[in-house]
Length: 303
Ligand code: RIB
Image (cartoon, rainbow, N blue to C red):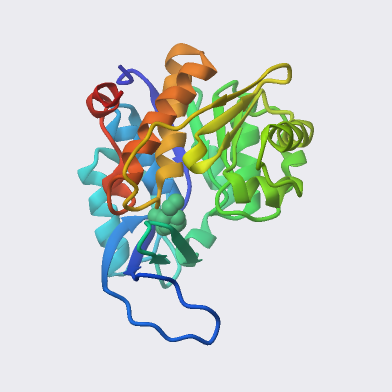
């Protein structure tokens, strides 16, 4: 379905340390956790694996350090058929995400960016070649990296999808004209000052995002409420598919990858968001980041 699509992701590669606990501690509180594990992660790597698992020809552009985590993460990307010729070694430590996961599958994440901070904006942008169909970026790399890569892709008329995670202030005005910009609820609040809690605030915040980014479509990821699509004329809120939540980590990455591929295939933003919603619902029912990413068959069988 997506095997003829050439996609690139410029983004982060992290080792995730997942600490499971019934409830997360308050400031000054000490609690016992129930277990911990390490998993492959990073928003860039997750989205690259998401694309590749759905069949796209996928290249990742990023950095890891020459340490044990870096080697493991690179090997894992290769095992998932991601082209890592654009991933080079830099810095003394590979990125690390400390993830606190509570009994209801909700997470809190702190990222040490490590090698991800060493991505050179000019070098990364040079990897955006004419033959690409699709570029995905996130905000887990330096702002200049995102800006230069997105602008180069826009110049080349490549479909460009900006995932706004993690929440941080960002000069959206520096990259006018991407295809889709897709923040989650807290990222929307960070970028617009408006929390998208109901139809009015979804519309208001979408309008601010469109004004700031001049993107073609604003797709808000609304957690268990699904997502919304604003094209400058119509707002559509598309409900999530019911699912038993085990771990919400990387559900947004999964949504973005699946939505982007379907948009490239069909050119239909609503069909794309429907596929994204299905992929996201599958992702929350599974533990870990990369392990959440479904195949095309799983998405098609899901409904
Ligand atoms: O989006 C989920 C990801 O965010 C995790 O894999 C973690 O590495 C953080 O980057």
